[in-house]
Image (tube, rainbow, N blue to C red; front, side, top):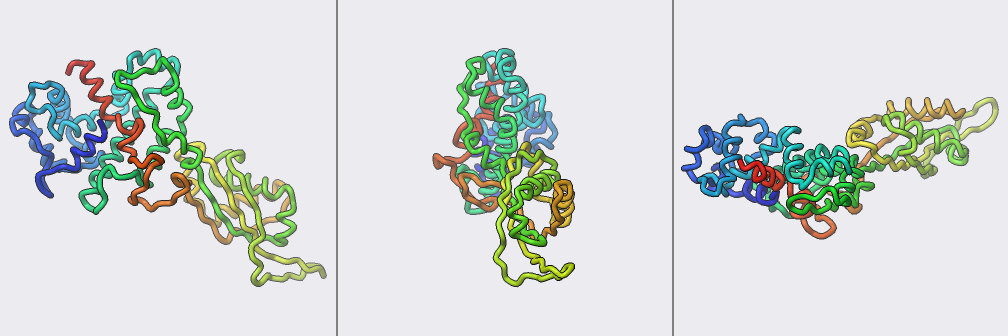
Length: 353
């Protein structure tokens, strides 16, 4: 189980020692002693995946033999994590853990790829948190953090229809029962961005009163973000006046002032987030004015621009800060996030490695 891997990663015989392992296991798998020393007690998934495969693959097989000196030792969990490093092995792990993978794929096409990627992400995040626990006061397994929840949302939420199908379909029964990831209940929030802008317009009151303004602003934001305008909803409001600039144009007074734009953006994919948060005021001004001109409206200038991703249960947390899930457990202790490496074990047993 993934929790076991995280715990194994956090255990060591000293601050610089590697995982605890029976020395006689080294004789069964040449190069394993070097792997233990290189990876250390709490390696990151990137370190595991970049390690030479031979000793870890040897350990992966040996750890399934109860008579082997390698069975049940800490490094065996890392070897199981190593199996998830490639997309092909992710597919094999998920398919091998299902009672009838063919029937499940017919009912929920692409399920193995989606779930395999999710189990990789879950394992990677558990290892990261275990590593951080050795460097800070934070305890492994105590609450999910911003990085973890967003990584899992990026993996699951764009494919939520497939994931929901897996947990609803009788055709997708696993050898060991799977629990539906509770993060699916929060996809609308976690796959959203709140964008705030201050724009300067010729006449704020008239701009807000014009029924076409909001739609044009939505189109401009969507174009800048590379998404469909149906994914953007804006609310326009007049900013506190302060001092307004007065321009005399052809003998009539026009008041130039600020309008606040609050936009709720639903992300169609995880990649869209990077585009949205990287947009600067100049780019947004250009995009807005193209849309406003097309709608027959006057141009504006964007003076300020901020974007913030939706937070778990409305609570904003900085990266690395503990953030409890709705039932008080961590991602490593709840739902499908706890079974990535367990699927590997099931597959290896099925293959009689």
